Image 1: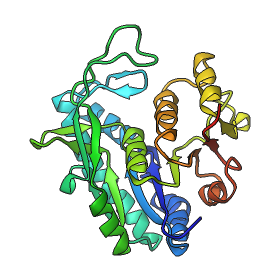
Image 2 (image 1 turned 90 degrees about the vertical axis):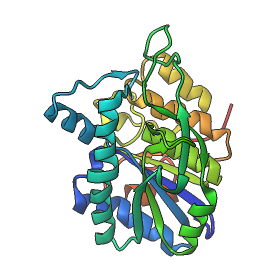
Image 3 (image 1 turned 120 degrees about the vertical axis):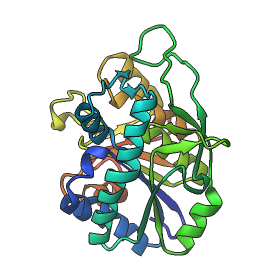
Length: 278
């Protein structure tokens, strides 16, 4: 860890409900990063909370290739969960961890600018283009504001929503937002934190974690069916952004409590690290 460099941390929504654990894992790691002079930006999702709220409202959740299809009603659910429930839960956990965080969404002050995603063919979605509805592709990140917040000693925490020049709001996959933010910041490290300890050869066996993957190796694991479901877009986003200047991308879980710090100090020791290679 070097003073002045950027780390980006993405938190899966499934982790936000346990304030104590989030504080002593992610919060603890971010606090250590700040103490070392590293600048930190956080992006979070809210998939499980959105799915649960959709069920309560009688709405059907549709996913293709591990990606959520977003109609008008689903977008309202995403606003409520990302900018409301999950944002507040993370703010509470970071307060407990003594991390000075401002929790908002990518819509605020143009932190994340986006345009509507056109229909596209995706891995796991069949041969035809898929229209994901009100889902956005990131076009710009407000770097000047992120730098000002970091200079003020504040950690920006962004829910994965973005907006276009007309103020139209879009739901965006949190891994996508995190990788784009990291690329725009030329971040040294990107940590994709979830409830799995990394890429597993057997998704039901944590002992099969793969410590290190190059783009060629990761592509082969997708083709061979080792990497499946929601892990596919996470890995594909990681591979795409390695060429944008990010030094290393880590997929890591929360066990033990020091997992993120251990992974930062010794890449591949607790998660899966993606590095540029042949």
